[in-house]
Image (cartoon, rainbow, N blue to C red; front, side, top):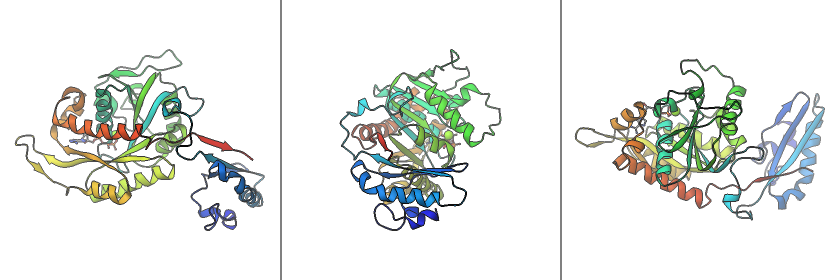
Length: 357
Ligand SMILES: Nc1ncnc2c1ncn2[C@@H]1O[C@H](COP(=O)(O)OP(=O)(O)OP(=O)(O)O)[C@@H](O)[C@H]1O
Ligand SMILES: [Mg+2]
């Protein structure tokens, strides 16, 4: 980075080291590679900067080889192919999925898994073909949320997802005993998630909902790198701390260029199961205000309600077993907003084009 401090930034403001257009830097032994992100029309004019960057890195003692590539993304709308012709998975993967979305948060325990499951079910209730992938390999939730105790079928090459309430499910929890302590390191997490994406027979899906582990670590990066995420939904509780964490979640997806579809405020208020009275336990409306400040959409609120927890713990998600109830309709309204913005292209990203000079 110090060497790149002497190379001008592509937009002329400051140095390449501070530029948001520089990719992650990969150092393998004495070889260094990275990319400068640009658009095809500007690629030619950036050749000087590209070669200066390469020279600067090569001049570092100990560096034998440096490769700097210009990575172009077509400008939005420039893609000639309709969205359906652009599968969400990168080349090489056999995924036939129209949109892959991540349900994430900066902090644990805010209700990501509950939200992901009910959102997936609400999308399926609209007639869409839906898959749900539990990417939380440290603490998988799907076996409990859907009451699944059997292993998925496999022919040794591909694994069949488990069908439940009309959606296809996959979780590391279906494959590994839940009492096994998951002391996995980064690369193992990445390969587990990659396998669950590529070696599971998802078939054709309109949407694959991915329940993310808490935080902004390896799993999130793997998802962003291995698949073209159409967008991320951030789940937050109204407390300030959780909101600070939500902000981190938003920042993380922005950094890897994944559009934020919006924020859901979970456990938004307390709904008394006996009298139906509403209590704003944590101060209500924080997530909506926060969403505005961050410039992302507010997708809606889900109350803290004993019924939601009971049904989750019983393996019978509320949207599946009380499809006409008030909770199902709250999830359904959120699903509508998510699907509309996916289809309107808010979450669409054109396929990146690599320009190697
Ligand atoms: N709206 C809600 N009303 C009542 N209980 C809820 C609600 N949302 C989630 N819960 C409960 O809160 C607990 C945590 O939820 P969940 O497991 O979905 O969170 P998470 O963010 O996925 O957690 P982790 O970070 O551990 O993955 C669960 O017991 C769940 O049933
Ligand atoms: Mg979870």
